[in-house]
Image 1 (tube, helix red, strand yellow):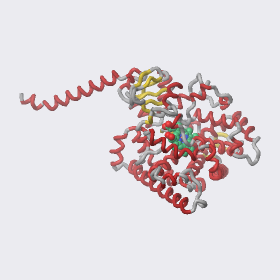
Image 2 (tube, helix red, strand yellow):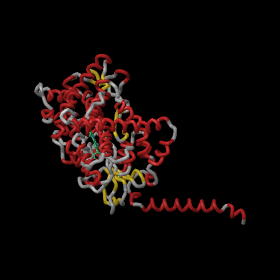
Image 3 (spheres, rainbow, N blue to C red):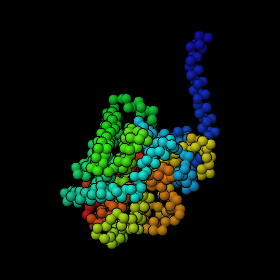
Image 4 (cartoon, rainbow, N blue to C red):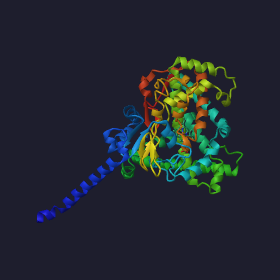
Length: 488
Ligand code: HEM
């Protein structure tokens, strides 16, 4: 009797465990998501895809699932990825009711939300309206006097590096260029990485913060504990977060004071007009700060990596380079950015790069709205996480024949199916706000680069091989060798 009494806690614990397991099993098995095709383990856990995210391969993993299971695949008990045009049009519609998931909140450590990570529709709409006015094709023309000299300086620095090193790391210089451009357009002053030839302190801090962001996005609860532990890599990340915030606050305040005191002398930035919104209480300074920090991250690696893959892809294909050069050589000597918009092959090369090397190739997570939804032939309950990834959408062989070939000519007369499947900048109400700025930089840098270095080819110096260019994906894509050596 006494022995039984002593064992009671054990029995109660055991019974509770059995109840938990049975309830979980019951929930999993009755969930409509469990009927979506996918690997058996994804019914129970999303650990496999989380692991793939941490090693930079989730986009490839999900793509392989699509090749095996079809246009809709289960990647976790409550998570599916879809590669189906109709479903994509529903999920990422202009007036979509599919909100971004909390995953976006965990990706950044900002105390208030910004355009990129906002999950609330109204908050996002208000910010998009305020920020959008400066990001149209026509308003961005005013910033060409800031952008063009930075492109030219990047080309000059590449020429210098070629002389001293015998090869040029274009990845580094495009990153410096894109960072300096978005830095000056945001803060009204450049990071001057092109001038100094090395990463800015801001970029260095961003890199230190990255491991914690990755950890937080995958294991949000664990990250809170890890942050408090004396592990150097995470301590540095916490310190880095504070420094980034301080730098952004100082720069924005400095620029704001200049704009308010002498608007004619202050350099125009994408945020100049927004100080008025702050004064009129349409936007808080904290929100403005969060937007500025978001712009630096969203506007640097994306454009730099796209340019890197573009020049690398063209440099290794003499036929494509010759066609591009013959078009570029017809430009007047004093050509303007508007002339570049008229060049069809330049545009085809850019589109093909965006197809094959989308800077954000993985799934863009959204939440199924209240009431559930029928997508790609499956009923998904309220709250299911759904995503589509450009990596897979851009490799449908029925839409893009020989999808692994870099073939700009496929864009000469794009089919409706091609346009429907394309999503390098996302789609709908959350489509990239920096898309016109990115196109501007891509056009200018590509034209300037190939006209300056028509003999460019891929370098084998310093052990550079195609392996360096295999892309890793931590939400953003980058070459795993963290370099791209070319020579001319
Ligand atoms: C080739 C260059 C670029 C590519 C491929 C790209 C791609 C994307 C993609 C795929 C999204 C959607 C993300 C999602 O739905 O989760 C996005 C959103 C965004 N991008 Fe870009 N981007 C590029 C350049 C830029 C630049 C230069 C900026 C500078 C301001 C920028 C700022 C943003 C912002 C703020 C958002 C969030 C928009 C919103 O949710 O309303 N991007 N970008």
